[in-house]
Image (cartoon, rainbow, N blue to C red; front, side, top):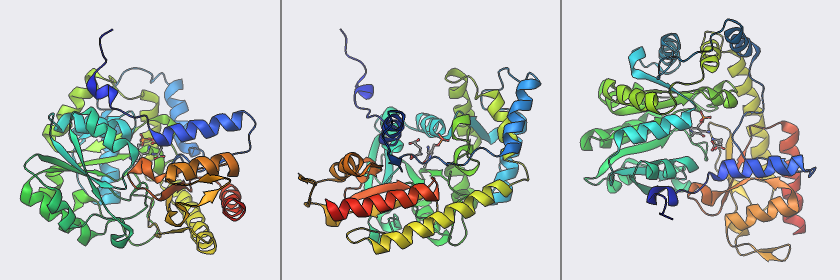
Length: 396
Ligand code: PMP
Ligand code: GLU
């Protein structure tokens, strides 16, 4: 048989999705596992959004839409971006997709030629490295550490630039670390981007979930920066709409048009019913999002308090999103339950088997010696999970 494509052969499955599926399967099998695997809000989609979806079905709004989304939804995205981020786009510059993950995929397909380099600061969200490879491009991974708050500095960016650099990927607030780049830090990076003239894919899907300080969008810095920015956002995290599969990107006219062309040949158009529901989500009623943010903030504070009390683990305080990136470097080389732990993967596997707690190893995000815990789960689950971690470390 002929071999499948070289690109396809090199693509690893998503670790976050795999751990989530494993934990869900264990629960279905009657095993009392608590899961911090996927970054998926535990809240139900707010009622007014669900009702808009139901109304769309009842009114037979069940046909194809333009490939980059309904004009009314793209207008709603523009209004929301203006209101929340202070950036102005035309509806023709918006591409609505079947989830922000698809947006990332299409954006990279649109801008990259084979062999182009895409700079990716680590720790990074799992999907990026693979999405870059799927576009035939090369991920140039730049490690950041706790010393810079897991943020890439202008110097680190400058050092990674070559004549093949096409794009920088910035996730702000970050998945997996929860770090948030402030205006000055963004300006320093933008200065390098403008000088060397490349794109920045700014994934701001967690922008509504910032607990310390204010949020600045990359595209809000200047017109020149905005022209080179592909802004990624979506309904999943801000509105507890993961299963509705709606993402939106904003970009300059040329990129937005090319993305729409790709969409017209791939998904055709995003789910019509979900588009009507998303219009309600993006309306003036942002109260449910504010309430969810308050609940996340409370969980974050609880997490931080407990981590300080557990010997042998620590974390840099996250400022946004809903993840704790736990430092477990002190556990490396330790023998727990008769097994020597040499990697975050060993630790996560053992914690799942013996402690019945599912977390994602840092290696999935390009950072060894860490575990990612999502706190988009109930306070009760968080308490149980941390009690189990404490017991696991003490008794192992
Ligand atoms: N970007 C980041 C940083 C994420 O964590 C996620 C989570 N799935 C996504 C994009 C994609 O979200 P979705 O496809 O559900 O819109
Ligand atoms: N983005 C979430 C996470 O990182 C959901 C799973 C995924 O899409 O990777 O866990």
